Image (cartoon, rainbow, N blue to C red):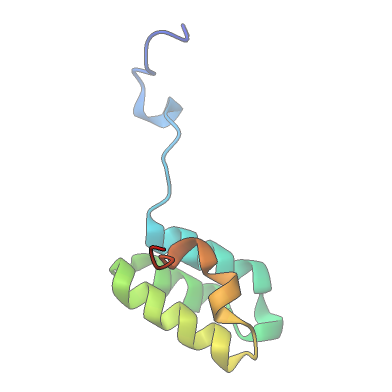
Length: 80
């Protein structure tokens, strides 16, 4: 495969996860110890981003984690 031509086979292309899938992956990294089981993470991955963010934030806060820090990449900082 040439670096100048994209993969013609869709299976060869790397698919970028959606923002909701990225949130679910963050939750997966905390695992069952914090109540982030696979079923919960899969449900979050399938939600629209705004809903997935709110759900993730809630789960992280309920688990005693600093949701603002964990989800910092998804939170817009105010313009200075």
